[in-house]
Image (cartoon, rainbow, N blue to C red; front, side):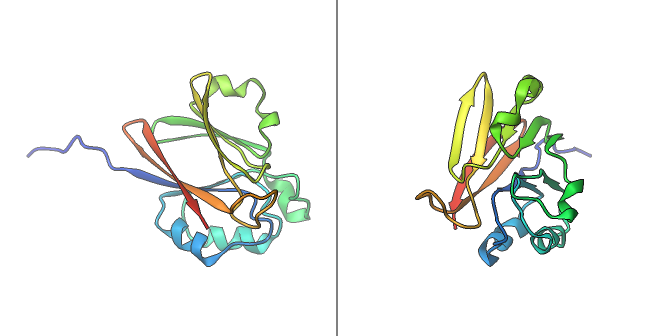
Amino acid sequence: MRWSTKKQKIKIGIISDTHNVLKDEVIDKLKGCDYILHAGDVTKKHIYDRICHLDKPFYLVRGNSDRDTWSNQIPSRQLFTIGGLRFLMVHDRCNVGNLYKQVDIIIFGHTHRFTEEIMNGRLWLNPGSCGRPRFGNQTSMVIMELCNKKYTINKIEV
């Protein structure tokens, strides 16, 4: 019997700054993902609950607008590995500190602006806000696909 050495693609839905708005279009995109990352500012627990009900591995960090009692349990930083790549997620990129040296990909939010840049050999990615547009930016999210420790980024305007 032969075993396939071809690895499956892993789809990661990356959102941030929902600010109490979670559009059905975003939920539909997240349903097709293997993992969900939220870089903070969920704001209300019912938004958190809607994402949890998708029953996917879910990583979340606390944002500056996450002030209700329920959000006290949310960490301000998350370090984790998906598909052999090491991730660091924070809400505000100012809070990364020296932890960037330990990871391949840094996910952040806060600015409500999509950002994709390579710095110091690492991807710095902000999916933008998928809740309410601010500062003249379009609402957006990202679907990242991982395969064999390589990634592709698909920005989706919502």
